[in-house]
Amino acid sequence: MIKAVFVDFWKTLVAPRVSEDEYFAFRAKCLAEALMEFGYTFDFNRVLSAHKSSRRICDAVRESYFIEVPLDLELKVFLSLLDVYERGQNFMASLRNAYMRPLFNLTSTVDGAYSFLKNVRGMGFMVGLISNVYTDLEVFDVLKRYGLYNLFDSMILSYIVGFRKPKPEIFKFALNSLHVNPDEAVMVGDDYNADIMGALNIGMKAIWFTNDHSVEYPFKADNFNSILNIIVNFSRNHHSLPPS
Image (cartoon, rainbow, N blue to C red; front, side):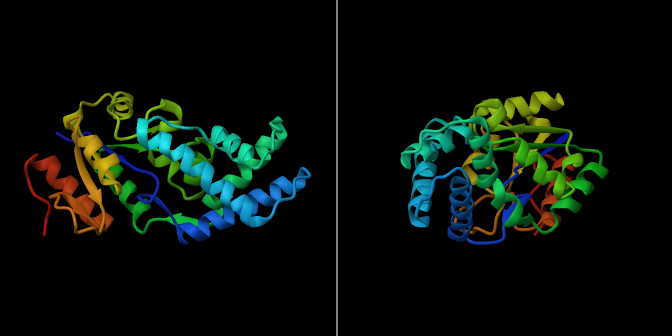
């Protein structure tokens, strides 16, 4: 019997409205402006290069060990690449705000996300969030902005747990938070390795939110209405296939 539905955050519920290059460029602009307020003037391309390099360095750790590198540490790497060694509280808070500005200015909810969460709750399922993110407050704030925050019974973030998907620990935290067993829960996410394989490996069911047809997987859909139908089928019969 299905009792809980867990959902990913980035590119499942909330997604950028621009390309990755545009997203990074806007962030670099915001960071350059924040640095300038504290007397540090850099060429835009140098700031953009330091931002991309610090992200690559931290992502290498995240992807190799599946542990979270918090935003504050990534910012310190970014500053070191610029030969800036100030770490005052106000200075770091200003940079943090600049870094996260694209999340508020350049994103929107994925089509159907709000209705999906409302419908899942209306059907009597508990709803949880499981997300690989390097911060917490900004994620909560953007969920509140889009009216999604109060639709969750539990929010488990890698920033808080320490481990990232697909490590089993983060899924175990989530299951424990809602007091459900793996076979009583469904994971919905866009990342095949992190969301789908991570969930399957500990005995959860998983629905791949994608339009990628290069990988065969029986439970995938590119819209939330189809995902809801698969969840209904799971709740009726654990072995049923998704509707065509």
